[in-house]
Image (tube, rainbow, N blue to C red; front, side, top):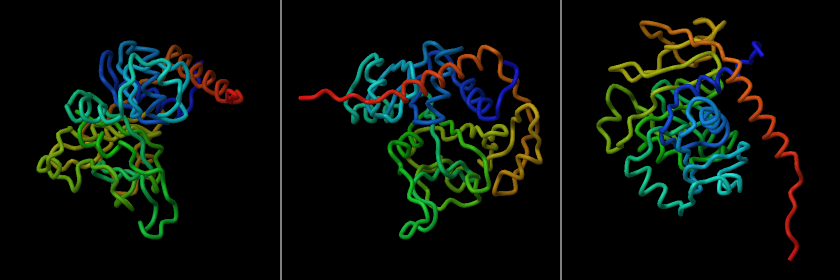
Length: 262
């Protein structure tokens, strides 16, 4: 149980940033895995909110999408989608927006729209969904992303969701109420915004990861925080909970879908 992968470390490091009782607006994929791991370990009373209108959901397996029936079946309640945004997110009741993206730039802006020119992209991505509003209104945003020079870039191909815009207080001069991205969790460590410049700097490293590795995976001249913290390795309990969650998810998603005949 002591052996672990970087993907597991990334999910566990992301889960650790959440606290018991926080209200978290969850994205599908890695954010969902991190948030549900937190619920299964140190934060049993976390309130998970998905864009489809499910509040306080407690899925036994990770959802395939926000429309997965697992979310509605295990939710405390289900409300219309506009109410999620108007009465919870825009009203300031969401502590954390947990997002993924295809690209993140040096000031924490996100791209989930296209790779390449917008009119003739090499890849068309799923799009914003609710990420634009989550990034604007959640009290703080966490982003989880696998690091390469194509994902952590100097300049986005398209700005889908706002981080700190051009930096140096630019976000504070807008009408966005949320606090912006407070952590970008990667598979080498964590980037956090520097006071004053709002530029993402290396502040935490996983066991075995190096500053040179981090710089090689980032598409801008990555600077270091004054103190680089070493993140503790996953505990046996964290690994057991995460692996069991993924095993249940694989088993559930391997089952054939049976539609009732009418």
